[in-house]
Each structure stands twice: as C-alpha cells, then as structure tokens.
Image (cartoon, rainbow over all chains, first blue to last red; front, side, top):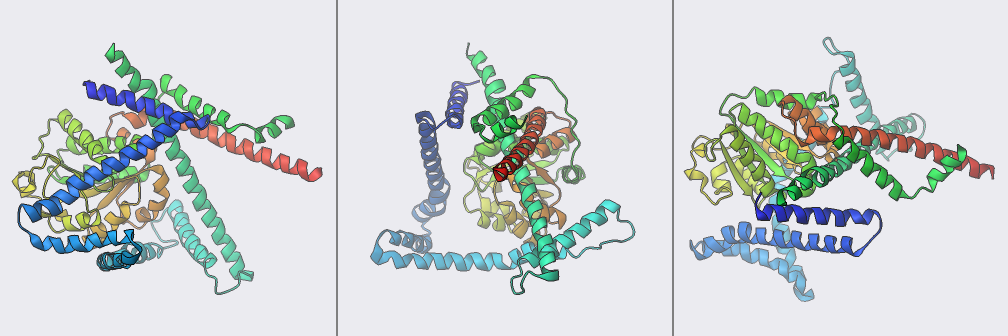
Length: 213
Length: 277
C-alpha cells in the first residue's frame, strides 16, 4: 500500500470517528470535521467544474480553436451574475427562461410518457385470468385497488363522506403502508452505511495499521 | 415490569446508538453464513446480463458519492465481475457526483485486472462528465461525439472499442447505480426516448420510489441496497463486502423491530397510566 493510500485511510478513520462523536454530544471535533467536509466538497466540485466544464467546453474551443460563436451562450450564462446587484437582478430571467424553454422542450414529451402514460398503463392489468398464480392475482388486485383509493383520497371536489369517505380512508391506509415500507427501507439503508463504516474501522483499518509496522 | 416499560420512555437515546453499534459490530467477528436468497428483481437483472451475447457492451453509470459506497460499491463490483466473466465489454461513467469518478474507475480497473481485460478494447471509463441530461440524451445519438474523451483524456474516436459502438443501440443494457433521483433520467430518455433496456442498483432509501418502474417493466430488475448487492454476489458466486455485512444487517433489523414493539407498548402503557391519573 502506497504512502498516500495509507495516509488517506488514516485520515478517513479520524474523520469517521470525529463525525460519530456527535452521537454522544456536539463537540469541536465534529464541528471541525463537518466544516472541513463542506469546504473540501465545494473546492473539489469547483475544480471539477473548471477542468471538465469551463476549460473543455469554453476556454479551449474559444481561445485555441477560434470558435467565437461560443461566446454568445457564455455571455447569456454570465447574466446569472446580474443577481449580485439589485438594479441588474432582472437580467437573470433571460438565462433562466432559455434553460426552462430548452429543458421543457426536451423533457415534457418523454417525461409524460415515462412517468404518466406508462405508469397508468401498468395499472390496467387483469385481476384474474388463466395462468396467473394466486399471488400474482392478489398483487394485481392490490395495485388496482391501491391506485384507485389513493387517487380518491386526493380528490377534493367531493366531501369525504359515505362511500367516497370509505374509499378515501382505504386510500390513506394504502399510503400509510407505502410510507411504512419507505421508512423500513430507510432504516435498512442507514444500517448498511453504518455496517460499511464498521467494516472499515474494525477490519480494513487494522490491516493498514499492521502494514505500517 | 411496568416500571421497566415506563423507564423505556425516558431512555437516553445514546443507549440505543450504543446498542446498534454493538449489534452491528459483533456479528462481523463471529463467523456466520446467513442464508441469502436472491430476490426476483435481482435474479431478473442477472438473467438478462447472463443471456447477453459475448462481446456485448454494457454501460454502468456510477451516480453516487463516497457516503453511499457501502451499498453501491459492492453492486458495481459484482455487476462488473459478472460482465467480465461472461466476456461482455464494460463502459463506465459518472454523471451526478464528481466524487464518483474515482469510485467507478477503481471498480472497473481492479475487476479488469482480475479477468485480464484490456482498457480501450474490453472496457472504457469516461470519468465524471458535466452535462447530466445533455450527456444522457447525446449518447443516444453518438457516444464518441458527446463524451469525446475518456478519463485519461484520450479521444474515443481512437479507441478500438468505439469503432463498433456508436450509440445506445449498440449497448446491451444501461445500468444506473443511483444514490439519488438519477434513474428517472435514464428511464425518461434511454428507455422511453431511445427504447433501450435500463436497470438500476439503488440505495435502500431510494428503492421505494423506483418499484413502480419495475412493476411497469420500464426497468429490468433492480438491486435494492446492501441486500440487493449481497444477492448479486451470491449469484456471481463471489462473496464481497455486502455478504460480509448481511449478518450484522439481520441482527440490527431484529433489534430495531424489538425496540419498536417495546417503544409502542411503553407508549400505550404510559398513556393509559396518565389517563387514569
């Protein structure tokens, strides 16, 4: 293992412990680790933006390949800095409008298709047919009933009374089950991250320390 | 007994943190072999990749930062190992997080070394690319023209691999390893606009959001958190970080379930006591 890898591992261990120290109570080690992390992230991001965005897409084409037409979108982008002064603040509407227009043009049709039409289509399914197992049929019924009742819950043009009230109540149960599943998965995710750090601290780090001596 | 339940309501949460830490750490030192039964979405993705003809390229997008690597790195490693073991070619890139650049490279290059694969012929890595949706849309028309250079700054036009690979039509499947909402972009553009197969490996936190895509058939299979990674490791028969962590995960879940039950009983008993008073 090279010197920089060893140093990197030791730094990672120190910062992991500094962040975990917050679980006991707030302290200067945690604060220092938090601020260093934010600073490093922003610095790293800016450097990446410069080397992978600004240089190859603007600086090099304009000054090395004489593609001066690129100065037009660059000038439009510079209008974002108009935000810094109250008198020029209105100028940022121009790049925002441009990006909104281009972005909407590109994404509205495929987004509608991907997020609405195909999803809707996926709820038009057989509740029972030859070849479906009991589990598949039950799953289809739950999907159809769940979608229908959850939509009823968000339908506010009628009072949630009588049949509509009952359906809306069923809808909220489906939503609560969904939130419960989401919460369970969140717990699983957080435990996984902890496992990653524990494996690092108790299994990977000792190997590095033993390697030093 | 009742007193114990009342005490739970006043328990300092730091005791719970300590208990979780202990319950996660101990299983790592006790050799165990918890049963791992791959979920259907994991099996579906495995079967799809397994059925691709030799030489087919697969694209893996490493859309996560180091804070999520515990869940997503094992997935990436298992997927790349599977691809190389089947003599598939691998294209990697990072679009969402600049810090992912090194993570993806380490996974692909170390796996390539294991299987004796050559960069530029069997695999390519673009590194982090700025542009996100523009890159995803552009690669549907022409990958070399959109991405231009790999992580070393070498032109894709000079790579043997990209003489045959023009756009998504030449790629077997696009897999997004996502710690955020990036999968929506791949479903919207790669699957819907260009009609190419898409799959994903996601952090458990994000998984609930993506099940509808699985049910609608917009994605082929899904790896869900550390469990999904362990399932894939089982299928490729290579134990890794995810398999090592499954015993801890099981015990931590059991403990959390017990704590939720105890907490609710304590809450109800306390409420009853208060209403009596």
